[in-house]
Amino acid sequence: MSTTAQRLPTNEEGAHTRPLISIRDLSKRYETKKGATVALDGIDLDIAEGEFVSVVGPSGCGKTTLLKILAGLEQRTAGDALLGGAPITGPRNDIGIAFQGSVMLPWRRIIENVLLPVELNEKPTPAHRERAHELLALVGLDEFADSYPNELSGGMQQRAAICRALVHDPSLLLLDEPFGALDALTREQLNVQLNSVWEQSGKTALLITHSISEAVYLSQRVVVMSPRPGRIVDVIEVPFGRKRGPEILTDPKFGEAADKIRQHFNGERKNG
Amino acid sequence: MASTTTTRVMTPSRAHGSAKSRGVASRRHLPPLAFLVVLLVAWEYVPRALGIPSFIFPPLGEVLQALTDPGATRSFLYHTQVTLIEAFSGLAIGTVLGLVLGVVLVEVDILHRMIYPYIVAIQSIPKVAIAPLFVIWFGFGLTSKVVVVALLAFFPVLLGTMSGIRSVSAEHIALFKVHRATRGQIRRKLLLPSALPSIFTGFEMAVVFSTLGAIVGEFVGAQAGLGVLILQAQYRMNTGAVFACLLILCAVGITLNVIVRLVRRRILYWVPGEKSLDV
Image (cartoon, rainbow over all chains, first blue to last red; front, side, top):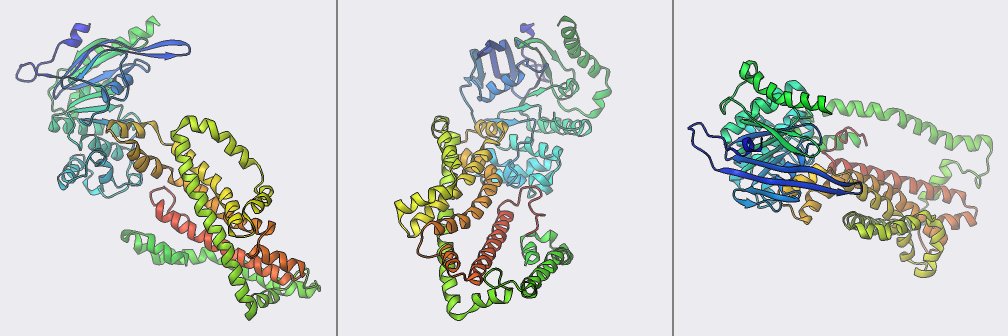
């Protein structure tokens, strides 16, 4: 299984691309009063530059821990996690992140929220502002640039959060169930938008999600994890190109990929 | 007054509704104003009709007379000024202390565990009971009153600051940390603005406590202030002057309340429902 995880995908021309992220034998253990909890156990995963990878798994499979380690918010217990060849030791500014909540600052206008990652490290320049406006336009929010977050719907706020994660041109986009709190219709719309934003930006993205169809729709590879201890049990290649539309939802290949993922969870339920 | 300020706070895009909202506002203010007129008329005529002696319950006319008597007006102004200076100085000191200590106690856990229980313990003593001590320590002048007010104002601001900062979500903090925000940036750009509604709620209580604290302090021992004036009037059975002082305090309280609410609406424009609160 882990050999599938390590194999790098090929890009459209068939050539191997350089891995942006290399995770080798990564483990994370939490010491609690009741003893040690193994959140992650021997994770091996390479993510190529420009690739979109999703991690699916039931609650407690350590997928959020994996994301936090990549974000530099948590330290690993053992193994290696490299970003662009350098070990991840703490937060670094070439990462963009979006959470389940939009995590807006309600006293700031949308444009100022989007510029926050820039502002925390340098004074935003007109070029930064222009980029922020471009990103907002890309998700259809440019006319709301001067609105306050409370004047926007949950889905619109979440789109703004995606813009914020991209404004400082990070090399890696981390998405922690960004659409998890939205209704199914909005979610589908946002998946279409996220795919086109990703396709146009060429960013490397890692998405944590509970939704199998969301994972298949957005990613080139889907990593399936099992809980306690958190391990990779399968990696499924999604047989679609980078640019996708809602029509692939009805493609038989879509259903096949989703079924491959689903069978892991059905099996688990039988075992325990 | 309320309706004009509403218009000013509003953004241009919403201003077109102001004429209508002014009409609505005045209609909303009509019942309490009508009731006020009834109360004032009753105050003037009921004591006279029932033959209640002036030293028990003076009619409104006598109170107004006590208030506007040329010699007395100057004295009222002077003592009001003394009380307000005490209240505002104490309020400012208490608010700053509450804010700073609130931030420190949330950020430095060991300090929180060390001193917070004692802050609560001190808080559980009625401030009126400590006031005589302050007079012994700081004398009959301004200082002892300022200390009483500061002590009263400090606690609600402290609580508001602490609970406000604590309610900031882990995701917000993670967002700032991912982008390598410094401690100062997190404090300035995230924690304090997020805590502002809660700090303001504490501050509103502190404002109420500030005049209360000043009067209590003056009752215990002072040379000037409305509290002193009330005590002196009481000794002379000059009930009209007592009521005059109460009227002044009432006016001060209402004015402060209006100011605080206006400032709140200005600062907390981003809190849902804040705009619709009527002054």
